[in-house]
Length: 116
Image (cartoon, rainbow, N blue to C red; front, side):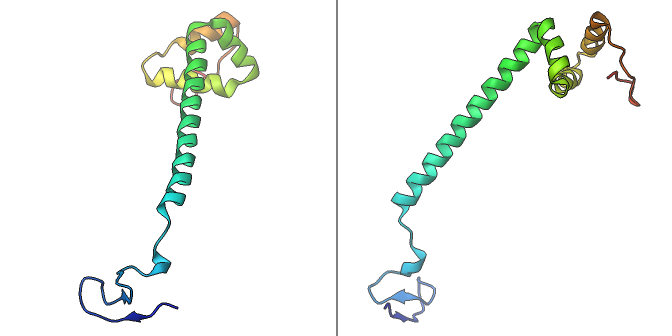
């Protein structure tokens, strides 16, 4: 059992009889907890790097290959929609309409004038 005494000074009124300003229940073993926290953050960083690399690979393949865009249109249209919206945000407005004309797809006009 730890005995505390009240004392005015640098320890904000609580000082352990042994001389430590911080009671035992406030202290942590930073070596044990810090190492496991670092391992978790390291794996999170690795996962982010892999996700960014995979995203860049898919974007680059869609940017270069019309056949891959057609394949994405048939299998994963939401991914291709994100690709087109990113391009439209960057200033490339005619990529969607050019692809739809080549593929023979009738695009729908939205309220803001962009095709879908």
